[in-house]
Image (cartoon, rainbow, N blue to C red):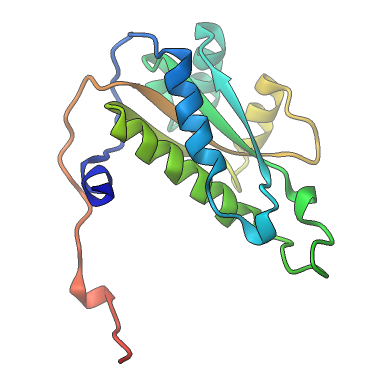
Length: 172
């Protein structure tokens, strides 16, 4: 059940060094590309990183992504805002953050379903974009959205989320 994957997913900050097979990474990317997007514009691309030097450089550049020092994989979601320009008289414009967020969540859940831990490290809209852009040579016009650390779990953090009825308004 999908709710089990949602409840079991945690932001992992410690990983074993075990490499992730390419077909597992491809499954995560496939899940990302099935995410909904405004007018089906799919305003994203992905950078899968297993190069230890690049992972270390990203960890050094992003104060809250130090877990990349142990993660064997990072997936960077890159937003492509221009893909939404002019679509259906402007209907799709500006929805790339929501769309990339949906793609990111799909990666997190697919990784959890396969037994891997993840941590979503935001990049957009903070000044962190520039160092990530430089390290990964992301061209202008594209926006580094987030970095997702992925790996075999080496920790068991407690659940932090919960259902809160007080945050629900029912209109019946």
